[in-house]
Image (tube, rainbow, N blue to C red):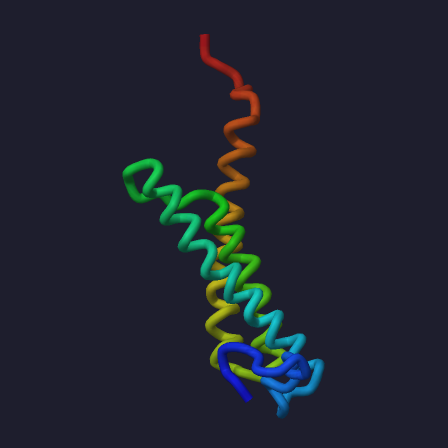
Length: 119
């Protein structure tokens, strides 16, 4: 077996992970996808900050965080990893709160400034 490439045409991904069931392989893919989303938030934030020439936390950072955190939480539940579940759950509360603050701010900025003015 070769770690970094196939030696023969017969070698498949399953031969790289002989102890894993198809379901485990799928969940490993889900976990890796969640980690990719979670990591993408930092790359995106870095690129936006470089473009602005100052530290910026773009709105998409929180959506990447939420999507990655939710995917990783699902993976942690599948793996029955309590430590991982608690960590991701805590993060999800923070991501949801930030998204809620963003939505509230957008709603307020779009609302008419109605109200009675004193004469």
